[in-house]
Amino acid sequence: AALAAAAHVVNILPESPATHGFIDASRLSQMREGAVFYNIGRGTTVHQPALIAALENGRLAAAYLDVTDPEPLPPEHPLWRAPRCHITPHIGGGHEEEHLDLARHFAANLARFQAGDPLSDRVM
Image 1 (cartoon, rainbow, N blue to C red):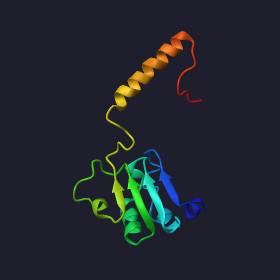
Image 2 (image 1 turned 45 degrees about the horizontal axis):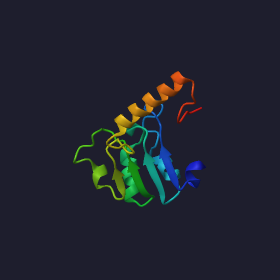
Image 3 (image 1 turned 30 degrees about the vertical axis):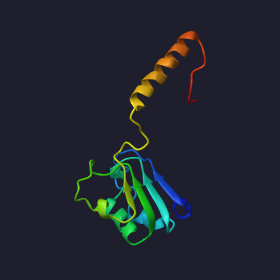
Image 4 (image 1 turned 180 degrees about the horizontal axis):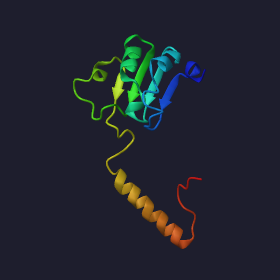
């Protein structure tokens, strides 16, 4: 029911025997026509031939994939030619100085912790 109602479906599933190919032709056919599909979990959780078919027949408006199977995706892979399929290099959301920023953030929080001050960006 949730797949049929959602205009956007985001897959964040981890890789496991239970999730391999979880997003298959059956689940894709349950999605609302014109839905947009995003995969930021693991590439193996999506049956890619079924995803390509859903894009080719217009069932899905688009797919945004930060993960694929295999990675990196070979140049001849059919996902590159699938209509409205947008592929990012499994680093979506990152930036050039990300590692330095994370180290600075950790060091600042360590100093706050040692001083007994509240931590910045604490997740409860």
